[in-house]
Length: 204
Image (cartoon, rainbow, N blue to C red; front, top):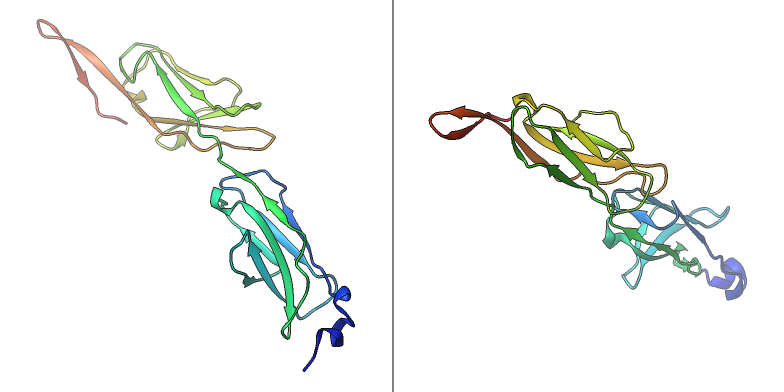
């Protein structure tokens, strides 16, 4: 049987992996995070991972978490194992996951308007930053990203009816927001039949 001493002489000589995380925390929901467990030039190791107080599990030396969620946050360690011999645990690497900001769309004067009115949609993002705003109708982008929060439709027509949403981008983290919930704009026409009535046209 091969003992620890057979590999490294004594316990103090046990290798200690180096654990790094990219990108550095904080990260935001939806980001991709990679943890790297480096055992040096040594080969033939199986890598064991631990998150917080959870049981260990095996994986490759490069652990990629795609589309991270808040539950992926915590402290991670790794250690290497070869023929029932274990290295020391690595340094701890902490991942902090924050919720990606989600815009809210405000519509003025109302979500139900009449032909010829001017409608202003405003994209509100609570997270401070140098945001650029993009607007979408039915999932298709309808403007070039710009620094103004407002999307103004002058003299609306039936063709402007539909579901509008927005999202923000910027150069610093978080580099993009979630997509807002869609708001439905309905354009109607006034028809005179002895008293005012409005007839809604189908959405585009």
